[in-house]
Image 1 (tube, helix red, strand yellow):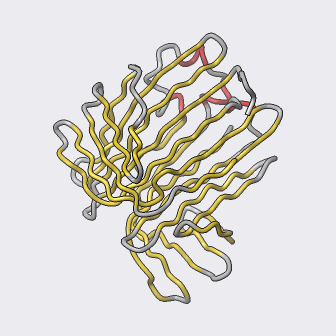
Image 2 (spheres, one colour):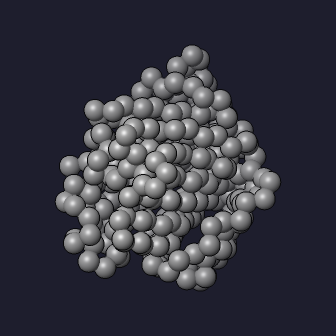
Image 3 (tube, rainbow, N blue to C red):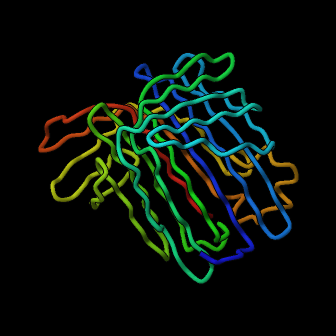
Length: 265
């Protein structure tokens, strides 16, 4: 990466889904662009009975504490404390490397046992996931039209995918810690090659949908003046889905997936 880039986005992502479908998603990050510096923390909680609840803070927060297989994240502004204990080894990849900047993806917890407690919402206990992304290329300069990302976890399997589409294409897929290739990635399924393994999404719930100016960036003051229209107009849709992983038409395992589609204008 560029030694002293003008743009840096460092973003942590954490999640946990209980067997009954109650879900937690957390974000922690910092954006530096020229003289601008923005810190942010947010969470999303979802259940079938209460729908989606969100909290957001612009206060700076410490990074998670990572010690061996354990990762602990605490957020005072969000009143959240979570612990992830890895069931698989970390995986990582360079998504993009160019003169304009780079994107480094580090999945510290592809599959973990997790327990997250958010004030007034009780504890969410189940399988979880955690990753860190570092970007030194501004989103408005990325050679990209569509991004598909997701993760599926069960008692025996993990599947993580990143699918970039546009002038620059890149696919990163890991199944149980081994890098594999996908034949097709859609909103309904992920089909792997050699051997053909299919992940089918059977029941999906929308967690968040809309343009970034009204979703992820909406809490930033004067956001319309900070970011160009090409960023504000990016559209995202994030789902939580019941899913089944099959091989040769036979179910291997079932669990929960969190996945999204992000489209540039």
